Image (tube, rainbow, N blue to C red; front, side):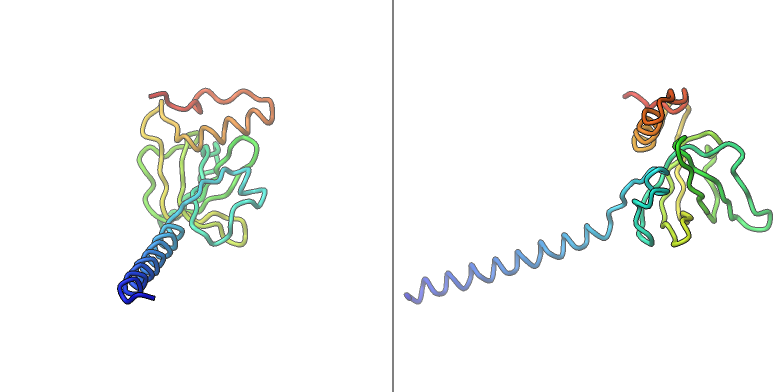
Length: 157
């Protein structure tokens, strides 16, 4: 093999190796930061992974909010009107958090089936519904043949 071709081949192989390493590291980093959305039906059916950071959302079930008077711990149920999931959160809830309103919680599902949230997001006005929550509610209500609640309509932009 000619020395110039050998040198070019070596440079190309090093570039390919470097590019492969960069793509592998980028893919690994992105995989670590993905937060998948699960609705209460999927969580109660066991489709959600345990001890992996995910997002869960739905409507806060009426009469389910329990606050610890000594701490900032709050427990409540989130429903898609076909299944409910208990959520535990320690911290200050958003001002717009209320029973019967849509929320998205970020956290981990523990081995007991309780979702331990580290962040709770509430809708920002009466016309907005997070797209994931609206889709989950629409899917659950159509499966049961019930009409979707009026305040669960997704916003149109």
